Image (cartoon, rainbow, N blue to C red; front, side, top):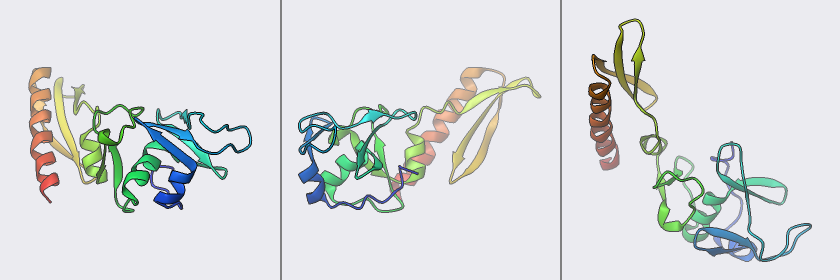
Length: 159
């Protein structure tokens, strides 16, 4: 997967290839059809900017993180704090675990459960669904999910 692939370039090498300007990567070197000064990347089907280096595709936000920080631990991911995958400003990027990254998604956490004719709230923690309850009102299911999200998110960030 492109999001976990180790990027075999150093911070210095990436600075030779790209220029960072307010969340935008620009090519420093002309190569083939790519001209120096052109914006690097195109939007992938997953909604993230990707660019090629030596024929391999990389996520732009991971390249930017490396340009500023030099490495990404293999167990970590880069999260867009404001949940906008095209906002690659360094201040909008942070290093997180997969679980922390999931907490920052737009997952609703509740749905209508046809068998019970009620709203079911649940949350996923470390790959397991935790049942939060069945509720008569949609608002109550939403509140239960948000409360659990806050509780588990805070616990995970302290570890």
